[in-house]
Length: 309
Ligand SMILES: [Zn+2]
Image (cartoon, rainbow, N blue to C red; front, top):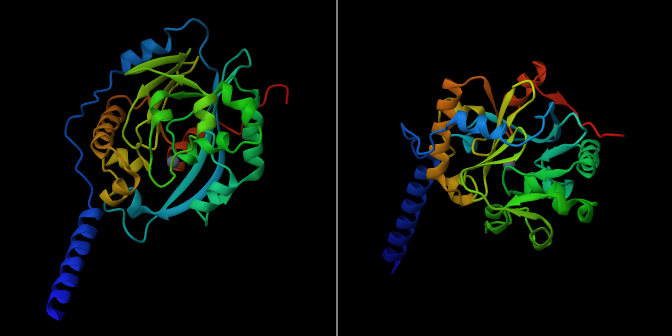
């Protein structure tokens, strides 16, 4: 009996060790992506709708957080820290209309998941005012940290009707309460059905990218002055995921229920795009290393503008 127990414990330990070791590795990145990016098609879609393109893109930092870099990328180094930011973006047109991308979550849901994070109440208030003034609100994906600024907004009823979620974002069934979508949003938001790429407004193109979540999408922006930006959401957490390229460890993939094979193919596609088209500035949703140089260079501006405010 004792021996049986010992064998059982040994087996469990072996499973845990093997699982742990495999969990720390990441799937390899393919040499060729099944998502070959046709940048000319996105460029054409960006000018396919009548009307002028946006004049500027602005960023607002709501939250800062640190997690182990080993969670963000294979071989991330146990001592290294991933400086994870919560950024919302505002896209503005000359006629005063605007679009908000990724309404960053409220204090409570931040605290619940990231107890050591900082959260900026004034910035969140600024984002809420900009959301009230905006014509449209969208998200790179349906995770709570990119959506709960709407879900838990004090102005929810005024905002939900101008929010556009993709059908995939609305329908996604995520584990561990990771989704920011609830039944009130399913009832009140506009549902968008598209496959491939879709021109949302002049200069704004959505690109379907189920991977990190079922509802993940890239957002390609081509401004009036031909500046090109690509918001990749959380397909990558670090610029390093694209540069190397390398993806998150399997244990993170498992925990989040990620479609890891798709993520790996997107990272290859984004890596190849960065080489072939460095003029398309890629913004990784949580990575200040992709945002701060653009702010410094004057490509994007800090702080939101509320028309008439
Ligand atoms: Zn996120």
